[in-house]
Image (cartoon, rainbow, N blue to C red; front, side, top):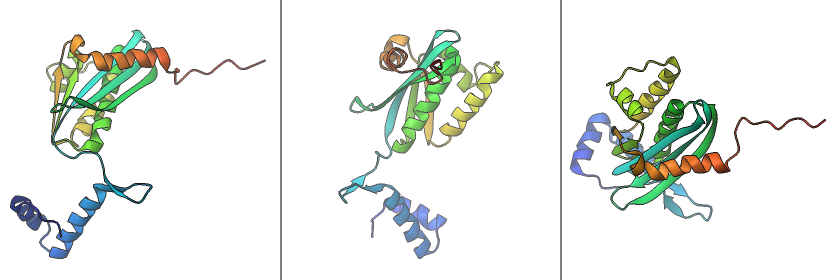
Length: 193
């Protein structure tokens, strides 16, 4: 049997008064936190808890124009990059690309179960709209804002911080790499005659 801290044990007793239910719940949590490798060895899934730092950027060449997103998930205690993601998203505006980058970044962070997720963006507009300081005037942004709020509820603590573009150089570089190297997801070559 797994030994749990007394405070956690008390909370579990409140939630699951019956010992059998409590033990079943703990076993399920442990099972979900482990995975079996192809060789049959047990390996830990993604890290659990702690603080993670998420840098996101979205951009378009033209507004609207060809757009891409970039995300960098980092462990701030070690400075180690945990995951990166870049993707072309077709033709859209800069603002939509910024929101789409943040959505993808939140999805990227979810399997790591951070207690605190610090999201850094160089889009002051997005940060101020999410904080409620600015109203979201464009109807096309509303579903994106709602999706970010729903994804944010899956973390104990999320904060959105505006940073200078120079401090977001890694996410920005991923956006440019995606635009330079990845194919347009909506491009269809002309049919041969």
